[in-house]
Length: 267
Image (tube, rainbow, N blue to C red; front, top):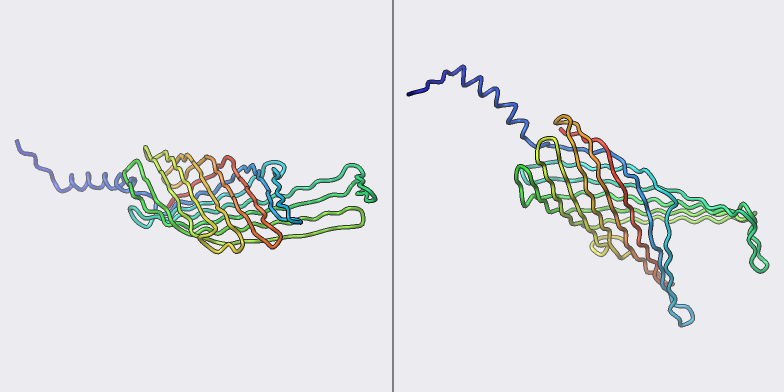
């Protein structure tokens, strides 16, 4: 038995197959806009030498509550295995402490109503090249290398009676960063992503600072359409730095962690 297919019938089947083929094409550009409910805590430590004795201290502290901060990341797909990934995180928090009653020590009295107000701001941005060493329709494993920029700002203002005190500091730098990414796409609706990154201050230009920045995050994404979706997950940062000066060493072990959620736009 022989089958004969007419040209019009071939064109009909070909036209029907075109949308399906295009639906399987991965996104060229993906932008995720969201927020992170940050819980920040840390340890401030120091070491110095006074009159021939080594003195050390370590103190836990937090910023007094959670803070909702912006979170942005984008992926530009340059080829089958090649991507550019951008991430941005910002934490900006104020805290105020007020003295409820007079505090006296020897001949010095700090009156009630005296206060100290502090502000901390931390920004982190990275741009990485991602190469997929494993690339299948449902699983992708990428190795990353790029550059990361970090900036830490602090301000302290205090008033005690007629006296006031104010100081502020701002430091920033950049360094190479390496990372690892795992992405699973069981179907066209769902995406699961795990990512980890590491930076050593000694690799780049952070002045007198030594230490590292570590980041890990996980997210789940659901696409309502090929171009729009929602995501949710969890993000975690660790800033572990030390600064050496003429009087000794000051260390900061700061952690930022919390759930994330937002919208996905794909083109």
